[in-house]
Length: 252
Image 1 (tube, rainbow, N blue to C red):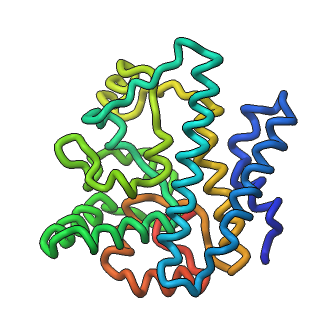
Image 2 (cartoon, helix red, strand yellow):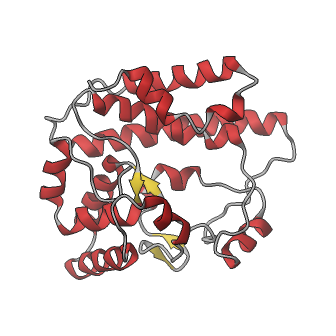
């Protein structure tokens, strides 16, 4: 393994630690949680037929359980904390999204199993258009300027809701007006977030990335549209490259 588990996890959580710099016990807790995520994947191996699906399902399942528990704790400590998110609200669905490769493969297989051929082709083309002039190595610039409705958004509802990326699950708000302002200014207005809730996605990302590193597989997150465009146009080739240790388009 190129880097130790601790190094990979610390790198994945580096942007999170500053929020808890006065609470070293929290930093240790976050590290331990990511290590637990890594350990919980040991019965899922690359030789399994549904490897990326099983890994993505494991990640989203752990996230959903952790998220619900943490949300309950936050609400018990802050009676004014209340999610503003509701079905049909899609102000955040034009923003730049990141996801793991296993989530992208899971979405692709879900589309193949549930879409007509025409719909699959249309969605593939829309992902390619959304990818636009993406250039490898310039992800930050792409993310800063990206603002367009998600191809999987239908009548303000997510058409892949059951397999949506963890980041989408974690993208919450307690202030609907802030969401509207952010949307109307193309994300120039920041929507307030709760750090303890928002870090839940990073625990899954870093834990699974560390696990995949043990097989020589790149498990870092990447840009939603470039990764989906590559996988939807060449699933088998993309999957073989990923298993061999190559990064996918848009992957950090």
